[in-house]
Length: 229
Image (cartoon, rainbow, N blue to C red):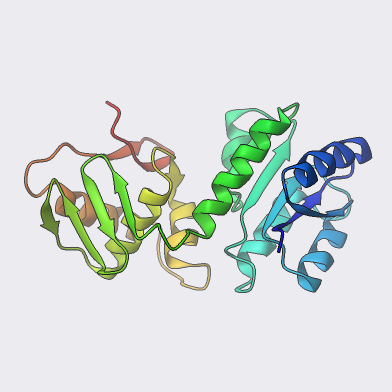
């Protein structure tokens, strides 16, 4: 069965272009012209991914994304935000609403398809993705074990989930709000500082044998697993 992509966009020519390119690449396509229609279509048939315009009639793209993330049935559906707003603050708002990626108009259809495939792979890892790796860190998802440079790393359950999220999205910066959403889930009421506590624990465990610190703190933004620098 072809993966279903829901296009939520009120510009008809852009929908036509996206539909043509996605169908040519083997996707099934559905479309909605406003936020209310998008939420109804998602409730009727859960898509495998959503391409979501920011500026929509009736319900904004940001609110549609938030509602997708609030629902247990759809919280794991990949969402790519499409928008003409390219400022850094706007990108952060889009990602903080729960979007997995952010593409600024005008964009290359081939680049969009590549990004779409990437977020879908992260959301639904194949059976062959049993070991996640980044530099000298390896996570065996079957044995539930982590090693660094061949040495065992002992992690608590929350640190394990945190590291898995970083390994599935290497080099990408996540805000504390995003980490709370992706690792703890919306229904858990915890303080923002809890993220910092678990990051410290994860950093200490990964660096116990004197390895280079791969957890990068981005001031006023968040954290990333990043071997650069």
